[in-house]
Amino acid sequence: MRDRVLCPCSQNKQDRRFFQPPAADFTPEELEKYSSAVSLSDMEVFIFPELIIALALANIMSPILWSWKEDPWFAGLEKLSPYRKALRVKQFIIDRYAFNLDLDTWGLTTKAKELARFGDFVDQAALAKSNALFGYEGDKYYFDMDIRRHFGLDKYNSEVIPYWKTETIEAMTAFHRKEGHDRGAGECVSFSVLYYAALFVLADIPLEDMYMMATPLHSQNYIDLKDGVLTNNRRLVTKAMWRNGTELSAKARRALENEEVTIVCSNEGYVHTLYPEATMPQTRYQHFRRQITAFLDSPPSRDLLVNFLRQAPDWQTSFQFKCLVDERPCFAAAETVYAYESGANITANAPTLNKLAAGLPKEALRDAPIPGRVLPGDDLSRVYGELPASFAQAFQRFCRVQPRLPGEKKIWRPTPAIDLRGLESRADIIDYLRARRVESLIADLAFMAYRDMALSPWEPFLKAAFERNPVCLEAARRRSPMAQYEILRKFGHDSIYDGTRLAQPDEVWNFKTGDGIEKAITMWALLRDSCPERRWVLEVIDQNACLSSATHSYCFPTAKGFEGLRLSYAGN
Image 1 (cartoon, one colour):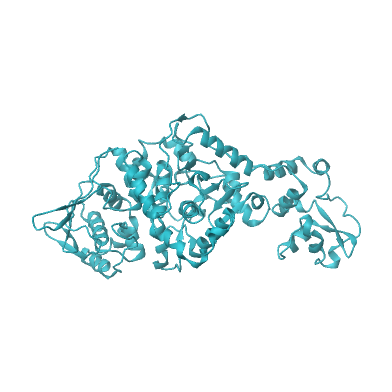
Image 2: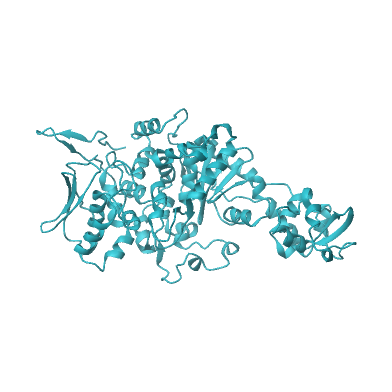
């Protein structure tokens, strides 16, 4: 780990405090990794899995997350069970954040550009097989459509891919400022990371009991709580919910039923399907494999058969239900029972079947069994004997999902764990992580993801700002520099990040607000795009962030501090 300046202020002869940027000497791979901790695109998170836990820690340090503790919604939370706490957190999040995966928010890039970046870090053929952005199309059952049409990319050529970003909690929260949004928003990796952080801070679930999982098309968490809990975008899924056969559970099951898990990440490291080395302790990973496998596995039973049929309409016409209505045995076609169930608050499962049947039209009830149909209550061997073998196969797959996890044939090289046990305040956690930066790559990357530029080197931040913010560049290319400057001047003046933390140009552009230094860096990115040969210097003088060349200067008032800062950038 390189040396860095963590106490950035010094004094000159006038006793005026000047900012000295933290310094670092990066190898090319380190620079890609550290700058990726700023831009946090889904493809970068896939290539550098350390970034997943780094962003989770950045969210854990965020004052937004800790402010939720004061919300009346969490009053009396300490009296609830861990699962009830988790439910309270989930509801708070889904009330305030919508799922968003549009192509306009973070713009587009190309396969060739991104493969050129990552060619030295990962085999391109393996990448195409395991990442949705580089050719993976998933199980056909999952989509029923071409993946590019699914993502809205069919209007572009096959080389164009979305530049989705894993948003920080600040960027997720700021979506209410964007046209078409009335609250916060984020994509699935952002939700996964936010749940991870929020369950730790608000529900007191230890980091040691949580695992973040990524598949080529989805991201979710496994919580080692009782029989297990999955966080899945906008819902929590227990083992009972996983197998209840409802439309919601069917959606929750898709990724683990049809895709390979490419990354498993915890506070002790990661296991990645593409990489021979794993930084998570092998015993920790083995424990996770046992727990998630048990969560997904349930012995076939009559109750599960009823649940299976609920989400398998093609098989319903082979079944009938026997029930008591007015103390009289009756029989009803399974498809009729399920059609009525969908509009009722009771189910066809045994405890409420008779009550459900009492609401059926009288003509739907028969006094004798329907010929050629099987009863779910029959012995399963009899059911299998009366139906095609394909039924038994489908039912077994419903009951016992076999997760496709990264294998254990790895070089196990555990890294120092991030242990937040016993730390009760945000300040204590920040102090702990700062103290761990020299020995822990993840702790160091967390501060890049946290965007505190008083404590982080500028080169990765500027590299990300200039190379990975296509939205503002595309929107501004038809405008003159003065017109670009006037647009930025008219934006709001508050940053979506507190203190000395900074937004990237596309965050400024999307949310139409930013402190002066953030606007100056955005202007810098626009000018580099239109005049790449011109050299610019950014200076903060008398609470103004001024971007200057030999012939031009653009200034914005700033309240972020950084007095005396002087930045230039020699990157391409």
